[in-house]
Length: 194
Image 1 (cartoon, one colour):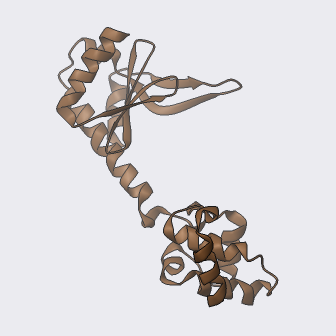
Image 2 (cartoon, helix red, strand yellow):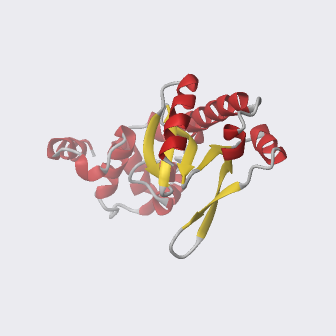
């Protein structure tokens, strides 16, 4: 495996600066924080996506199956070991496309466009429902209001005995941190504003 990995790492260097991390019991390869390749037990896997998946299937690449303790997970990675070892002429283009797809998908996932309210830090389905009932339908509206305004809207629709932690959860969600990490000073400022 060491030979395959070191040769593969060198091969990948032409597609940009890669990072390595433990993933699925093997080594995942990332560009800009997006995983696009995996090496596990002497096998090399490439992330599919859109038309790239069709090309990988056409070249008889088998899907990676991750076996967990009590179940198996089939993920969108395909075994390209033979293509790599045989120096397949189309492999460079497929790896390049995989990197592009992976980075674009990660950027979309990380953007506000893809987020549901429950995907924000501190929020969950029940809080998302509370917000929607209070008229806060989406992430854009959520970020256009202050945490205090959000809290007041929820109070108006759900009663004034709503837990004060919600106020801090909203503030944390807007700053991207867990509400328990807000300073005591910030919490007190929020309380005074309500």
